[in-house]
Amino acid sequence: MSTSHPFEELIVHLTRTSGLGPGEAARVVADVLSYFSEPVEEFVRRRHGELKSRGLTNDEIFPRVAAELRGRRVAAPELTLRQLRRIVYG
Image (tube, rainbow, N blue to C red; front, side, top):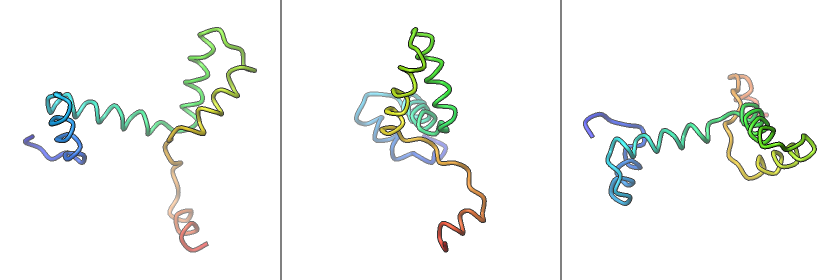
């Protein structure tokens, strides 16, 4: 790879172990990072829409989404500098 990528080691590993080319591996890494950086609110809205389009009712959807959230990594909320300081110093 000619340009440095923040996850270059991961891309090299995927290229070596999966048979993907460097460009394909970089796209896979970008897709995975994008998937896991989705904010909670966007995830809930997206999943609600997906499940609603499959014909599920809200009574079925909301417990399912709540269960999915418990097992899913989601993006942290944006914090102000003051909030960060309060996390560290109380």
